[in-house]
Length: 254
Ligand SMILES: Nc1ncnc2c1ncn2[C@@H]1O[C@H](COP(=O)(O)OP(=O)(O)OP(=O)(O)O)[C@@H](O)[C@H]1O
Image (cartoon, rainbow, N blue to C red; front, side, top):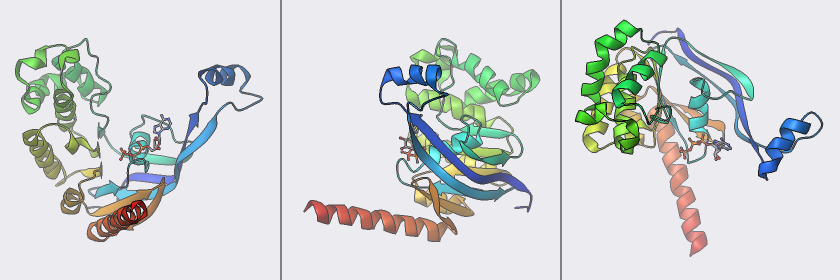
């Protein structure tokens, strides 16, 4: 690990606009200068952290804590409402796996486009497309339109592209919860291998995996950083809080 920064998140906040009625969105466009027709829902608030080059940082938090939104901001998929961020180097975003694919194009065609979007030149794509096909390991489906794919197959192609993107920073959102056991193991092996040289920011509900992989863990709670530090300590505190909450609910329900 070096002291050089790979990711810096400075006071990042994100508010979504919630419209009570469909018409309100149109009203906002027409009369938005005078009146707000939406309610703001803040899902991230003043999030600050840095990740050094070569570090492996995990993010934990309950459903809806803001983990995916934070990764989407860092990957440039959505803009922060407040604050600023910086990611140095080429990013491979293993998020919302495959949401950008065109269902009318084949796996191969989507893989070529996806790899180019991640920054590979045409020559580099030519050189690695068969390796991407082998990594995805979906046989003749690779030549079929992606609308015929299962979610698991889409995930395989998406992960395969990212695994060949020659990235400096791997940003992973729950990628290990998709696909079958064999593919999950392949992804885990890839991430462990990448970890030897690259920088990783990974969201996972698998606390054991984060403990084994990460150098630090961030616990996000209601859009704010509740704790950051040693993976064993943070995941233990998080687990204890979840357990205490469940016990409270059970005793309340009894
Ligand atoms: N486009 C959107 N418009 C409005 N609210 C949204 C939008 N996207 C996400 N949210 C809300 O933002 C909050 C954070 O969502 P996010 O997906 O970042 O949480 P998460 O920690 O990744 O959850 P999970 O573990 O369930 O994947 C949630 O309350 C969610 O409903």
